[in-house]
Amino acid sequence: MLDTILYIVSIISLVVGMFFLLVATVGLLRLPDVYNRLHATTKCDTLGSGLVLLSLVLQSELAVAIRLALLIIFILITNPTAAHVIARAAYTTGIRPIVGRSESND
Amino acid sequence: MVFEQILDILYALGAILVMVLIFLSMIRALVGPTAPDRVVAINIITTYTLIIITLIARIYEQVYFLDIAMVYALMGFITTIGVAKYLEKGALDK
Image (cartoon, rainbow over all chains, first blue to last red):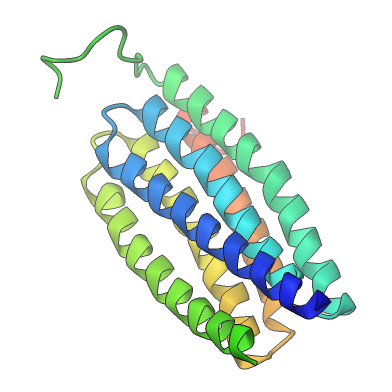
């Protein structure tokens, strides 16, 4: 019974994580600006990879699950930091964000 | 058990889907108008590669792939930090 619940939770987590990864790639391809792309990719990518790794954590024994949990914590720390650094570098090199509606820009 | 077989098939399909997403993200890394666009694309490709490595470790039952995944995550983070600092200051040793 507990195994069945773990399998179902793992399948749901994997499918939802893959959906968020797909959303991240669509946002990376379709949005008009560096900051918009960063906004789309960072959050969807962190959540999606965290859910996929959670789905793997639920199916592993303890020694493997600890390593996967360390990977989740590492991703949760480094991904927003990298996004912050990229955004600051983009702003410093003179790329201004799009303000208001951008009908003429796309 | 049927759920276990479904989960194995879903892990393989997920690895294939993430591989397709890597190729789609590579379009942005090639086209992207400015340099930070390319850095964003490389950053997301690093995370996708990490997911593929962990899924392959589950499919082939090889535990030591996870250590490779950790090292890869660290290398991707340092790459992003280094390229962003180079863009910002024009050199790496300032």
